[in-house]
Amino acid sequence: GADVEVTVAAVAEALGLPGVSVEVARSCNDKRVTHQRLDLVGFIDKPRYALVFGPEDLRAATELTGFPCVVKPVDNCASRGVQRVDRPEDLAAAYRLAIGFNLDESAGVLVEECLLGTKHTVEMVVYKNRWHLLSIIDTHYISPRWPCETGLNTTELDLDDQAHLYAFATHVARAIGIDLGAHKVDVNRDECGNIKLIEITARLSGGFHCQCASPLAFGSNDIRAALKLAIGLPLDLEDIRHRHERGAAVRAVFPEPGRITGITGVADALDLPGVHQIFIWKQPGDMVGPYLNSADRCAFVIADGETTREAIANAERGVARVRIETVRA
Image (cartoon, rainbow, N blue to C red; front, top):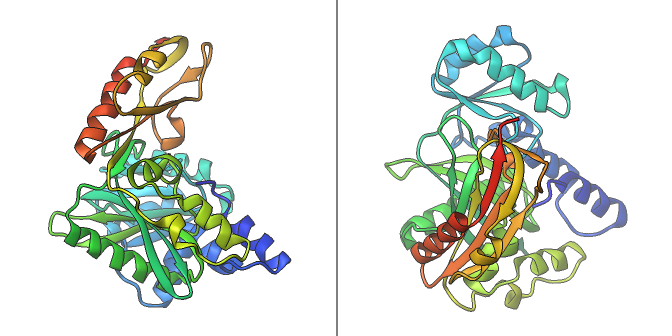
């Protein structure tokens, strides 16, 4: 899940290792370039968008995208600097937030059509022009305005819908030029079943998807498969084989914003059925909140179950046991 696909592609190119080209990696890493590259090949199943370079361009951009819209940096990750905007009077503040998270402030800010529906991630590897589906997950967010993930879980879509997502994701990967290795495609599915692209990355996913949820649910080792491909070994289908079909869920813990005064309940949570791991990035004395993007999260509970519903329930019971006490600063 590390956002280093351009670095990896450059190293592979320098050392003569297999991998996607630096150009393709940049097309996945920079959201502006993603749009432009897909425009060139006539790919239309993505949000309407405009690239703006100053607050004075925002109103013209929303004439194209309409309201609600999404304002985002072009070259960051974990939803940093991203927010939904419902009113013209909130555009300027959204622009300032987004531009502040750009790694290159001169690169502009994206204003996109807001896609309404459910959000899903399709994770795959491609080897010798054959795409292999690793997993599909559903993702959930703290509010319509702020795309901070509350968690993810193995998908609850039926098999036909999963097949449509896989076909769509494969089509996007071909269009962007990914021809080897691991990648993931984030999509929006509306109430009519129409699918549109949110983003594509030339790497495995974050949020404990590839390293925790998939192994728990399926008994696969997608990271090992990706590593082998990256150093020139052939794809080993045993690495990505689903040895069982269970449910898995990740849920974040959201303490009240403020300074942490104490953390308790972790051992109790780990004793609960289905709870496998708990990660806490903070300690007493650290500040937490507000929760505006996925990088603002501080603690996670990972669980499994016979079904996805059971896994979600197990994760949520674990979250309820973890107590992160705070005081307002």
